[in-house]
Length: 172
Image 1: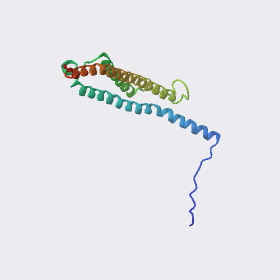
Image 2 (image 1 turned 45 degrees about the horizontal axis):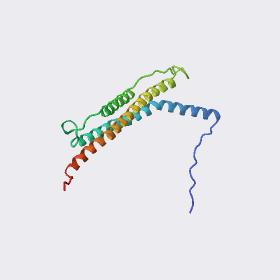
Image 3 (image 1 turned 135 degrees about the vertical axis):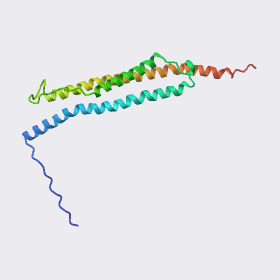
Image 4 (image 1 turned 60 degrees about the horizontal axis):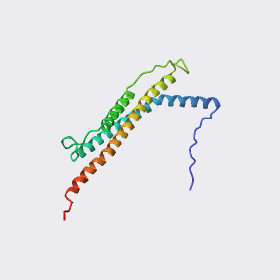
């Protein structure tokens, strides 16, 4: 068998100047990508923030048919209101992070205030702060929902157990 010669790979010889300019170019690309990456994170977070309260509300609706609250529904507690309030706050914070806010940079300034790099960093920090607030509110809402679920379970279980034991008493 006659092996075919592989085509030659064209390479560029890296010198100190070439490598510095290549690193500077890659750094500029990464800095410019930060707001776009934050937007992608915000979209995913918004999807999660809309799905979890919806699922929790659906579970509450299913449980309300056999619950002991008003009109056969579950009793609303402060933790439940806190959970949905935190989830609403998380959605608002995420939407604020998604709306564009413009920062201007002067292309003649290389570094420091007013440079394009500074403008991109400010935009990324702005989005980061709002997304961090949204994550904190969302996790706080999850904690409140878990607390509400754990606090409501023993009461409902003891009430249903008491009803089941009424007919099991033998007088003989």
